[in-house]
Length: 150
Image (tube, rainbow, N blue to C red):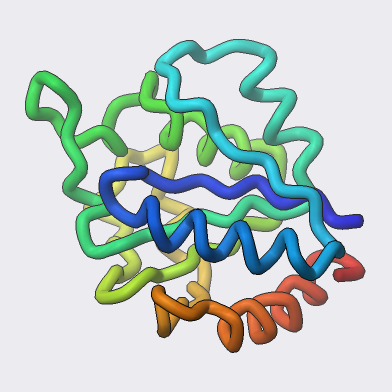
């Protein structure tokens, strides 16, 4: 059973993440791990990344522009849970699959902090129908076979 860690900003694509998670769970081939939005960079957070077979990063149209309470872009903050976990995945050479939701786009490397720039080079998967992700999940399951025996 493949362990998939699903990273996303709730404000950007929460409903799509929930729908995707439900459909993936129905396949019974994956164990899903979800982030606990916390700014604490702990060994426990790193452990979640380490036990994952693949890290899925859901990216909607606002992903790059989500801000914190101070108005700063969250992805630029090393203490942000998504930034931290994605950095861990890159440093541990975990397979990462960006999933573009709706009109989400991959950022250019120069739009990301230096420790995340390699992420911009990964080919994304497109989630076409946010309301009914069944067909997309079938395609995603086939794609996951590149990383694990899904």
